[in-house]
Length: 230
Length: 392
Ligand SMILES: Nc1ncnc2c1ncn2[C@@H]1O[C@H](COP(=O)(O)OP(=O)(O)OP(=O)(O)O)[C@@H](O)[C@H]1O
Ligand SMILES: [Mg+2]
Image: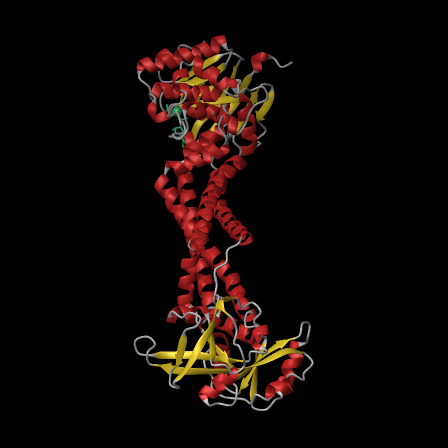
């Protein structure tokens, strides 16, 4: 059995963006580890590399150098670059994603949007009833047949959260999930995330500018100039 | 709860006007395509039917221009050079011949026909041999002549309709001051015979004062060697031999230009529709880069996105194709009318024939062209990376 302390382990992760002839070191040899069931928040000034880091952890991007282990598997390391296909396979087993922009499909109803992942992939054990259960848990059972244009921003983000969870991910990755919401709605989303973490044992990795939200998690990691500070 | 097909068609409903315009483009091109293909097979069939209904496969007539002869045969025009009737007897000696019948074609100017007068065409036929060459003739009223020199006439359907004739009426042969009694009126045959007035050969010879004939119609025995017979007939002096297969080839050559023109139009229409499809699908992919990226974070593989976009193309093409074929069938007679205007010679009967196999062929072509058009947009969509969508 793998040690649960090693659920996610980053060692010397770096990411350099090349813009023309200029190299931008967005991330400098970042190392840390996350345990199963943790709620980790990343905070830091704009441009400090939070999104860059979270994209690497979420297997949305390849690092320039460094290693990443996930659930006992070596994902990045030894300089091998994973193809989009390989990344997709890892992502759909482990992650659910929530972004600042909700990216709901405007032509589909709330219910259809949440069920959307099943049109492409259904993890063994993921059940159709999960769609309704999640929507009910997030207080959206009365809005299932509405189109995204007919619900509020806070409700849209709940739909996006439900959509991220239908395939029962191990880790929920949220990059500024309340960036487009007011204080009250932000607090509601924060409560939902906390509930998911405490009651459903979901591991959450979140980026937020909002200190109240960031403090909800058990653990806060500060970032500056592409480096992490505990 | 939601299938890829639903995602695809709901996406097409997003920009209704654009989707509709694209479908209209496909509709028009499949309409043109299926009509053209229907014309290609229908024209030849109609021509074959016309030729079959002649009742004979070879004609012998006095030497003249072969094109004139060809049109004369099918349109009942007048060549007006004569051959001896006795030739029928000598021709009948050839073993390949089943039957031969002498025909005298005559045209008289009728000052009372139409506004400025017109030509009335008469066919002098032999009551003993001609009717058996046209076993498909059906009488609407009356019957054939009572003897081989009676002052009687049998009218084609249109000839009778034009002059409002009934059996028992007397018709007046212009120029000649002769009256003939109508004893029979034919049903419509859909051929040139409909406009003809048939008279016993001897009667027409008497009326016109011409003791000869213009044409011999020859029916060849089943399985006989037509080419062999033609070669023998060519050796006869001062006559020309026109075989209907030659006539058919001549006519097909005459209309080949028209066919190529219509074919070019169809190809252009398909190319335009193809550009329309590529444009529509590509636009809708570019507009949805973020959504496609988010689908990929949900676990969609490049192939999944490819098939999603391809499904959209397929829906567009299927709708347009079905509509186009429907219009083509619904408006086949209008197409017929247009085609008749541009063609040098059009046989009677339906020229545009669209059957099930043709509709399926067209549908196949449209779907194939559509899928080809969708290839690039679908491939491009499949390559969208999720990061592109979430970068603000
Ligand atoms: N695709 C890219 N190409 C070039 N440079 C990039 C790219 N993405 C990010 N950067 C640069 O990398 C640095 C880190 O960006 P990143 O988006 O990770 O910051 P962030 O902490 O998420 O900021 P914010 O709080 O504004 O979201 C910035 O200087 C940014 O300009
Ligand atoms: Mg960011």
